[in-house]
Length: 270
Ligand code: E4P
Image 1: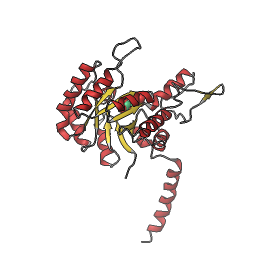
Image 2: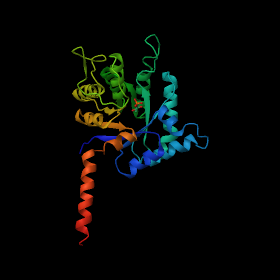
Image 3: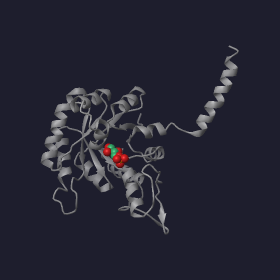
Image 4: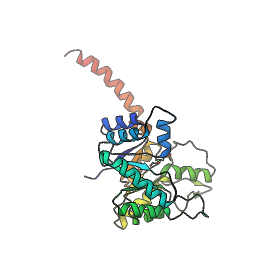
């Protein structure tokens, strides 16, 4: 049976442990910012041991570890090093590679992500391609052999809102069909929302029978998770607070209160 897989987008070991104990996690995605947030300046933490704990906690399900270098030579070496060091622990390491490590159009490293994906995939190392902002980037990463492509939904919404002068909070819901300004639907390169980006990636990869999985990333609220499921994403990677918010509803609380009162009365007669 196929179902939406849920990964936990976190490097916080306590959060990861809870998600696995409760049976709701199918994988973990980390990035350098998440590791910094989780471990910070804690001198008592041994990073190697900490990552090993994450890998063991994930019970053999995929854990993405991101490279921190920028040329293909460096990223291939770093990806192999991370894989050789950590994959023997639980056989579940995925190396996260930026689709394009350049900073500007003028840089010379635009193909270094693709070269790295090809090299690592050819050696049997699974790659999760990160920082995907267009369906074309996803297509090229898939063709180069990536196991996963990660369209960054929330950051696309941020970009469209910023370019359109909309005020917004980071976690605000942005509709799949986009928003209009002066009667025109706002977009970035023909993408009208983060979920539209996910949807276009899913459509293109499915249309051509590519096996790369679409991992909806940068999801910031439960409705975006629902939308990602509705457009057929293979995986949604979620920060722990978003998973918690998925369970909340005012009428659920009200219903609980009412049941609780009745249960007390009825069970008193047992
Ligand atoms: C996961 O792979 C990404 O690094 C993460 O989802 C980014 O989320 P953010 O845009 O909220 O930082």
